[in-house]
Amino acid sequence: MKLIGSHTSPFVRKVRIVLAEKKIDYELVINSPWLEDSTVPDINPLGKIPVLVLDDNTPLFDSRVIVEYIDNVTPNNKLFPAPNRERTEVKRWEALADGLCDAAVAALLEGKRPKKEQSASWIKRQQDKVTRSLAFMAGELGDKTFCMGTHFSMADIAVGTALGYLCFRFPDIAWQESHPNLAKLYDKLLQRPPFADTVPHD
Image (cartoon, rainbow, N blue to C red; front, side, top):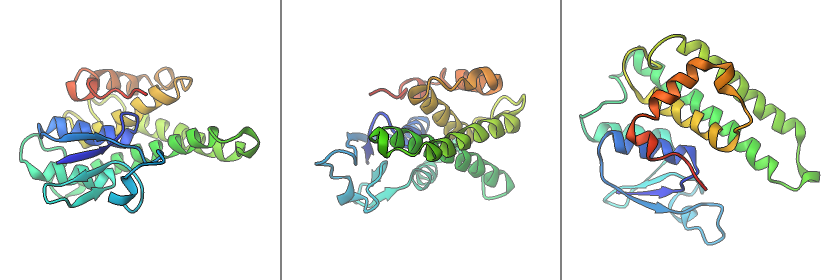
């Protein structure tokens, strides 16, 4: 399999962590849809990364689709529980973490536009989503060891990826101070090689 993406995308990192946790070999092909000569739109009509190209050349896109597929490929280290209320809870954590990343990316891109074209209200709207999401995550985590309690799951990968993206792109957001339980979780996740080996960089 080939994973098409970049070292900076939180959604690509999420997939890379899952592949590592599941001990699945793959080839990482660095490509960004923001490059003029990018081939990403030829593989994914949405022009987004990550894209997982299967052995039969079928392209899978949207990180949530990809990670669920990967988790079903092998029975080891299951990250999603069987279809039930707990599975819904895991997917809710993932949706929350992905939404936080979406808002952070939107704020970042808006901030890169020429100053006179930027919308301060749009940036604030995205920043407010990040702030609310962090508070909700912290409240749901409480004093639990992992997002779902005592066991590691896809919820932790999604949340850890989102927190890592904030560390990378928005170091001025002092979420570690306001939400020490999230900081404790993130520090614990960084002790896992799949997280430590995929810390984003330009």
